[in-house]
Length: 223
Image 1 (tube, rainbow, N blue to C red):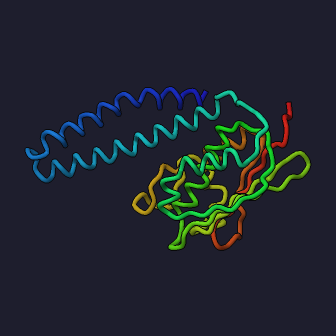
Image 2: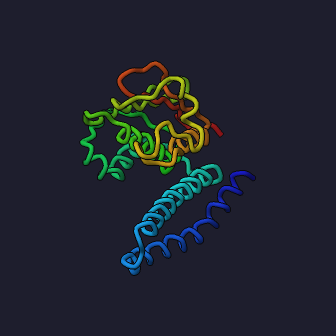
């Protein structure tokens, strides 16, 4: 019921938000010269708030859909959704000069679209929270007892162990909006995707030199 409410509420918020954005754009484009400095500042604040609200609504809708959508499960190589996610992020990957390391990844039983979204979120975070060095992202997988444990590592700024559980909660941010953009829902979406596959995801505590995430996926159909 909560997921259904989140979906309906988020969907219904899109129309009034569209009107706010339309009115703000009209004022900026046609009447900016007639507004004093205070009015222009307030208009800028309203436009920025509307933009953040749109991001929140879209992420909330995405989160709700993952919980209710029917899984399209099939046996695929991990390299398929991984390479598709890298291709979808090509602009930020090229801008950051990100380098990827992966080879001979196994086949798993999953919803390829959701897994692509999972990889995109983890890769986006690895690039966003990078140091002055070019991002290096490594994807490994280990097979054991009908389960595949996937590891995604990076050489970014890392995450303190005390935040290991908090980062997977919805709308949780460890940095202020001025330092890093985002809604704080990306890792919550990752957790939801993995749980829909009856797996779990966690941050490796104590890892130095970046962040290292692990998540489990089934090797074949369980039902």
